[in-house]
Image (cartoon, rainbow, N blue to C red; front, side, top):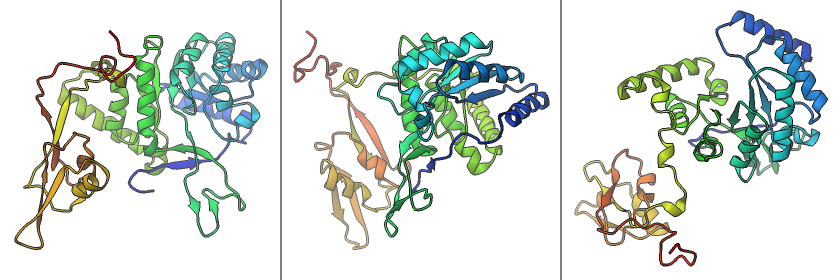
Length: 358
């Protein structure tokens, strides 16, 4: 709904016979021997079940397995999916089983429906995972039909929470990928990023936060597999423009700049600036600032009753950038850094912090 696309999934794992899947995996690898083929798996949390499936899958000639510890619906009731991914001890245990019983690289797919994603990544790493992939879908109810009083999607006059995916989950995925990449305990753990990747720029952002690969699902559903080639072309052109010779040229480049809120410079200041030549006098910035922020934009009617002018009140502006977010004209409102003459000061040092460091 709206400008951001999201999809709510309540489907379960395939009911096709296992042998059909195994045969198709084997044939796919024969047809495309130069492509890496990873098989995503989800079975009950029993060692014998995992031992059997990873050995059957390894026999197909695939290149690796992905352990799906993220599915938030249907599977947890069976002791699978996020029922495993929400318990670090289970993540470590099942990962270790799979490493013991096959010779393939093991990627652990993590659930976002957890308090601290780094803890889950640490458990996968301790169990011997070769990499983690994230995020899986997010528990959600996407809307209610107010005439029928039933949610979407509807199944025989009932509804349930499902797994939300698509462009809307990208900010959550970026944060979780970044937190794993910046943690000293998991910084060396390879990451395959998932979550709202719809264009080359999305892929580049995840790589800048430390991802080694990215995965695309919703965008392919909406646009077909051709979207992947579009992403490759766009990413290649951007890399050429930045003179990056390989992905390693910018992989993780944003991580050194990612910090905890408490270390941000509280003396850093910006104020908004409105380009009057670009302004279309819609008044959205004024309404947002006047009604919900700091009353830092003045509206002045012109002699022509059909026009008006909006100016920032510098003394009142706190640099929240709400006006910039609401403005429909690109680059009409910019945030201009101000020289305060004050030294760097973070929350751990601030006099208002009762726990400040001496």
